[in-house]
Length: 335
Image (tube, rainbow, N blue to C red; front, side, top):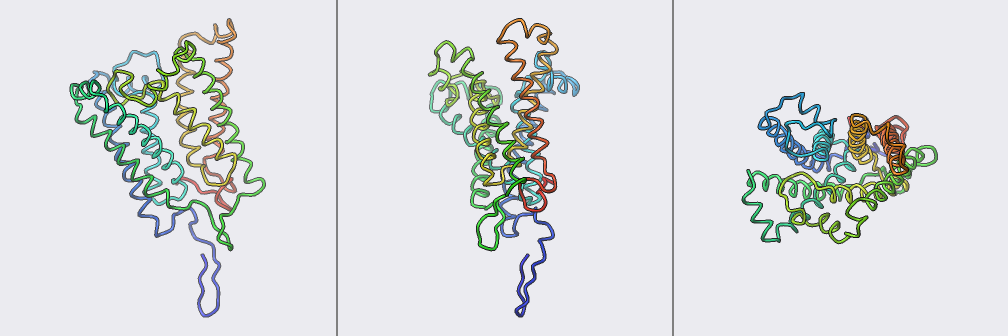
């Protein structure tokens, strides 16, 4: 904080440097409100699935971590559950005007915008529109999609013009030097390696392995290509999106030129949950005992172990410690 009165300059530090500038707090609150509403809407779909499926709370808890459990929760999927938690988790700090929430909110905004554009491409197909209007509760489904698009536009429109870096006396962003850059670079390397691993397994997947690149790309960008109507993301869209997010965030974190710590934390937590779910699947199917019988099985086990260790490290490193890679003398937490 710098104040000048009769030639005297007050250079007392900002009592709470983690809060956004007063002029920008309205933007943060608008973004947080939209993310919170979307998170509650997605949670509502999950509650509806639990109620209509005849299961209870414990059935849903088991479904969260047990991929092969038949369960009674036929709505959404692990990607949607993870992002619902991310929407609600980022909405709170954004509503509180926390500066660190910006990167995570922007990440979610871009993901929502891409998902909305994919749905819009699908709605250009007459057959897909016909399936849409005959789907159960299609009106609520369309309303949720529209809420996702509105949320994306509000978040990006509100937070993109807002700067995220501390500015020094020269007016230029303060670059995190020396040791404070190291955690950021570590997270960047872990994300980049994980992105390459995801890309390799995607290329070795059944669709690309048999030369169906066109079908894969169409399913990734066109909602009508899968022939199904719903909120759950198809594997093609989820795989392509994961590769892009991991590589882009990894490159940004490696450069350490902007604060992407909250985005690393949010997406690292999503990937950590999905990896834990894969580990549970390996355990309950006795795959651990049979994984070393083939080179591909051993490689899958090794990359899964790397994903578990890497995403755990990213969550720990980006969770906001004093003297962290961003935020000057003390890191900005998401509190």
